[in-house]
Image (tube, rainbow, N blue to C red):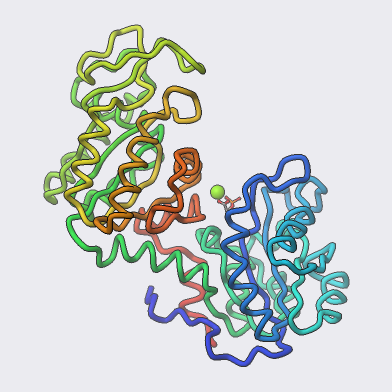
Length: 402
Ligand code: 3PG
Ligand code: MG
């Protein structure tokens, strides 16, 4: 995939043009209220730019995972309201993303105004990447802007098939995400480090394998580290681990060694007899976990060691927490390292890029999100990129006609 082929709308005359923007409005909503608007906030400058240029802006998105038909609990209406609030201008909402309601809404939309259409996944054709459904969407625009990096790992009608039907461009948020990830993986300032945490080796094998060939230091945290300990014959007590993947962990360590990549594991760990708020916790050497205890976080020595390894590097990519950060006191390792990474970044010593659902929540809890070089809004798409995979939604934009 030639990313150089991604084109933006810069310099195009958009006056009175119907611009169909595929955004990712899939944000957490509780009791009809958006609880984390990060993805919406990041979209706003791009939408504002289109509106200022006189475009008739038509935003399309999925929301949640409805079963291929209309379902009020997956309506985009509350999200559209929040987006309007952030844009500081009223938004027109259409009760369907194709057909009469959508056509009527778009026909009545004046230049400089923004419309949001109802959830794309209320139609089966969306997830099937159905050309006939894409054609109904394409009828609503003069040109298409793909600005949903976090949905780019899905080959759906609104991310893939549609790019064959309209002149198609990459949106500013998508470009920003792609550039941030390229800066850490394609031509980074070396040495480079990756912090990979989370619960399971099994879900991150392709990612660990790909990174082992790319970075100089592969720093492992979270319950995933326990499987690496098992592989080395270390007793992990009652800790969460995947014995079936111990062999895989050994293979990853071997592959890393062959490529002169150092795998860095915890020195000391925080243990307790159960994962519960306020559980009695103690810090022990990773080699001395008592049989009735489980590892729930990395210890302070480990944080200091990880920070010094990262301190020797110029570039860092981070995915996954180092412990059970949602449950106090087992977030201290993740928060401590997050503060160190933020300090190195603000001192101009480190380029730091982080992403993935839990990671962003952990960085937010540590209060450092704004102090990293870039924090991606993507979950699955960020992981697939780190795995070295081609994201269909980006490949489609790269090969689209303009
Ligand atoms: C996400 O939140 O990861 C994206 O919006 C994609 O959603 P999906 O996993 O339901 O396809
Ligand atoms: Mg997802």
